[in-house]
Length: 541
Ligand code: DGJ
Image 1 (cartoon, protein in one colour):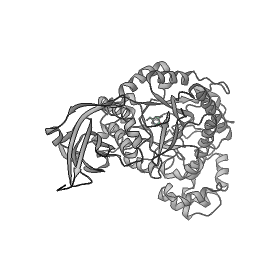
Image 2 (tube, rainbow, N blue to C red):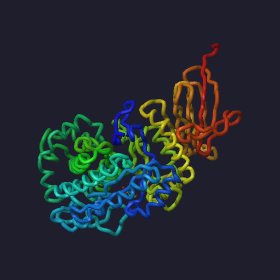
Image 3 (cartoon, rainbow, N blue to C red):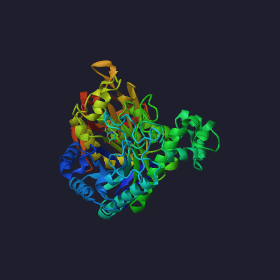
Image 4 (cartoon, helix red, strand yellow):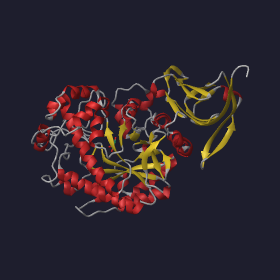
């Protein structure tokens, strides 16, 4: 069997595992869980109950290389064994120099050698920001490594390459590990750019060859303010001369992307699994430095595409309420949707179905998935502070419902994955804000109404996913919606059969045969999977 790979499938970039098209119905664990295989037992069980097919698990530089040059792979090895026992796949997250724009997972020998492994400076001459900015850690000062330090990228890349070589050795035949995230939420908080002496010198030096021309050729891969700054700047010169008002963020993006590319390149030379970078997003009104400046936010994606070509995908960690807008931003250039982290509120399950059905997503993975159903998840806490009126954003996802969605979509992979890249797989959801949507699928026009029946001027958190598997046969996954079936390619439509059921071991297992009221008025509350056969004809035929 071939190594997991991303390649085009019906013109769409698709992950292949064991030579089959694959999508990740995933879950990311809390940061510290995967440092203890004993602790992970309960987490694997939870993943199994939920029906996830892949876990995203941190592997930290500090545990893998506790002393320089001495590697210890006990923990990742144990995680691989557990995954095999539970029949799951793994995406490892390399917590190297960056974890949420900080250096918390760098080994002690890196943290204590500040001359060799230089820190980023937010205020010139000072190591610390003087205020805390990261992840709600209100009392801790902020320290982080500089993206421009050669010694750091060399050491980080060496450690990452050692991990990848080890994975090849222990997993090169079984492919339990199907991808790797390089670093975690990179970038710099508190300032648009590093203000150390080395960074100042690089900022005054000429912009690297080819970058400005590349960005001018792809203005859509930048936010308009940055594209304008690039268009108005000089052909060559220092960062300020070429990029004007956008210079500092573009500079940070370039050096952060170069850092990750260097690390990824060394890792791929050892074992070329698919690799990606995740992103702490911009939230309304934020300036670079309020969010980590230089990270792969959509507004600077052109720089990342130029400077980090080794990365296969850039993936948004989506906790902000504007979920669909973010998905659109990250797929506009034809990139696949890979969501390594997502919130666990009441859109979590509908979003899973929508991401697969509409975006043909490669990965959808709630963060801290074992919190699903708990009101006190860290992610919910984040939203409490936000000005959101949509009740679904402040309601915990029902755990049994999430399990239904994840089990169903995992079991449907042999049916749905081959349809990626075609219009035979479509979806609509209430979160788009439209009370009604119609999907055109050959013989069938499927309409979904997402009004809350109890409060008609309010939308619910409904979703519908439709797959046309033969000219007259469809699978419909639906939740919190009213469906209407109408003829698509002709004047009339007959329902030949309508069944509810589930997939088991790759085959359809029918439940009730629906007719009468259940087919005449498809009011769907709890999530359901239906199989529909239709025929169409013209009047007088
Ligand atoms: C985003 C980070 O990437 C995760 O490691 C974790 O810290 C979550 N935020 C917590 O909200």
